[in-house]
Length: 100
Image (tube, rainbow, N blue to C red):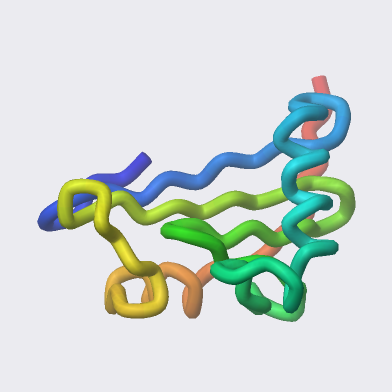
């Protein structure tokens, strides 16, 4: 979570194993593109995703990246927020390998 002038943005990362409920919700949103008002296609890097409310979700190699913008006392509109556009334009997927 990082604070901005009048709010904050957060990044939540999960997979089917770490948060099955959130992962299932992501899949439902992806399938509902073009069918549900308020769900819009999005792109983060070279990955397709979903804009909804104040959030963008994108899957990369089985992990879902969920980036949310909270500002204006909960009335954030991500497509209108310059700070959110800057976050998305600088976001890059990297594959890290963690070893013991």
